[in-house]
Length: 85
Image 1 (spheres, one colour):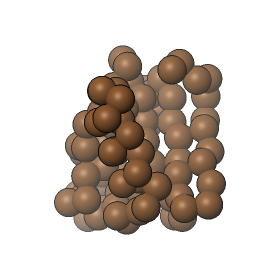
Image 2 (spheres, rainbow, N blue to C red):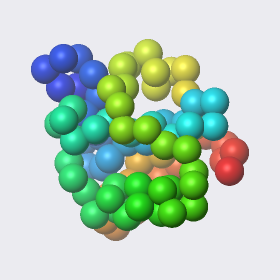
Image 3 (tube, rainbow, N blue to C red):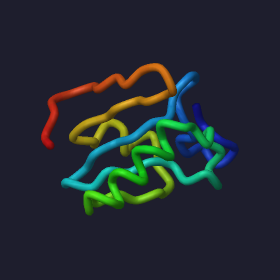
Image 4 (cartoon, rainbow, N blue to C red):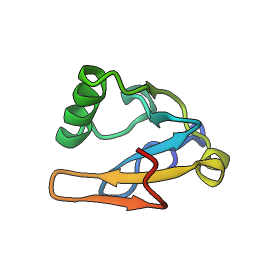
């Protein structure tokens, strides 16, 4: 789902995360994504485990250039691509 700036907000029923060069990226809440429970939990885990992550703008081209993409919501986690970590 794109926001009014044509950047990724989230998927229709899930939060989106991409991995590029070892850094996990997800749209910030300012981008219009849902403040999901699993999203919040994962960001806390990433911080605790010192896994590099960034809440940032994600453009459509970033999806095609990503090493991995995964989607989360309260009841599922779906990975697209090979796990690198």
